[in-house]
Image (cartoon, rainbow, N blue to C red; front, side, top):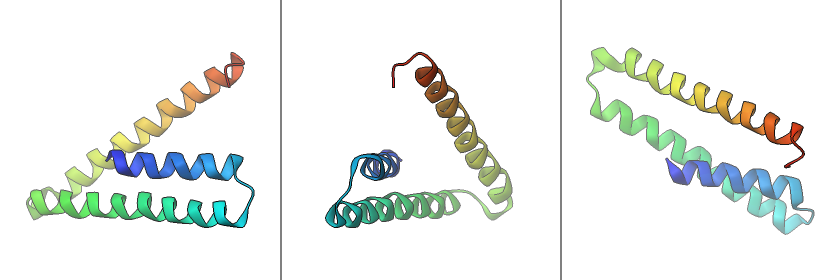
Length: 85
């Protein structure tokens, strides 16, 4: 889970501050790492739950991710409004 987050954070940082071709290629690698870890996480989730619980498990995971994205968006907006970022 942390590797996924780290991959996407590094991707965003490279997109914001990178300017060379090499940095953009490195950004593609970090994005691929984040995306592949996310896929592996879902595969593992389906491995540990019984088939009859797939819908519920998927709903909880998607809900948790949406809530995390909501909180990070609110926090980011508060930081921008406070001239922290």
